[in-house]
Amino acid sequence: MELHKESDISCSSAAEHYLIELMNEIKIFSPATVANVSCGFDVMGFCLDNVGDEMVIRKIDKKGIYITKVENFDLPFETELNVAGVSALAMYEAIDVDFGFEIEIYKNIKPGSGIGSSAASAVGSVFGMNELIGRPFNKTQLTEFAMKGEALASKCEHADNLAPALFGGFTLVKSIAPLKILQIPSPEDLYATIIHPQIEVKTSESRAILPNEVPLNKAITQWANLGSLIHALHTSDYDLIQDSLNDVVVEPYRSQLIPLFNEVKDVSLKAGALGAGISGSGPSIFTLSKGLEQANKVKEAMQSVYETSEIDFDIHVSKINTQGVKIIG
Ligand code: HSE
View 1: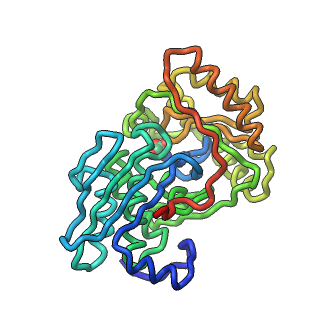
View 2: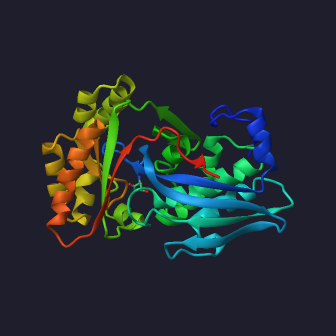
């Protein structure tokens, strides 16, 4: 892979850059993300603000990639079986260095929650390593490495969670080969509310239930909605966002895996959400709202559904995070 200094990496001064190059250890925050955004299956995603994993990446004398700590969830320490390890190995194979890296993972995003748990791990390791070696790779190249880790979890290569985690904001994965990622503007007043019922839906399983073919009339509706969503985000047209957030292709199948999905969607829309849909492959459900107050009103409505059931849940209100993965120490 060709190395070059990128124009799309978050900028910092030359002095900051020099300091990072001297550092042997870095602590990063790798955010949760919402993929698909109803009409953009496998191509659209956006980044959340206040939910994510923390990771420490450390340069060590010994060559290789080592997972030395995993907190909160029972994930493999074997590098080849760990999503963060696999993406790190993909990047490590592309560099020629006489040292290695240790990775500590403080996992806050539950695996199988539908808010990009594996993507956060896959992104965190390559972002941290890249910082420690002077940022030879741009964000698109980092996404390519991270796709190897994501593929371990979901059994296929896609980047709709990875791209928003790396770039921040809304992203559209225009193509996978060659990988082309477009950054889409986030309207200032747009907020997400995400509810996570505490059941696990494996991405590989929720992909397996989808049909291989889509009827033409449904495809037409879906690409019209995706096109209009992109236009609405560019023009901060909240009415058009509302009109575009529909999924006639995937949601009818996957919603059956999520208890009370239709009820949550119904109360959210009645409470004033612009739209509601499955976050990634589920079981989390996302809504978008205009303004924080409205997003909180939608939160009350969403949680009222699961409060009357036996199902435990987490719920978050988040502004769209336009920065993405970042250094915290
Ligand atoms: N686009 C993916 C899916 C996201 O819905 O299966 C989850 O990895």
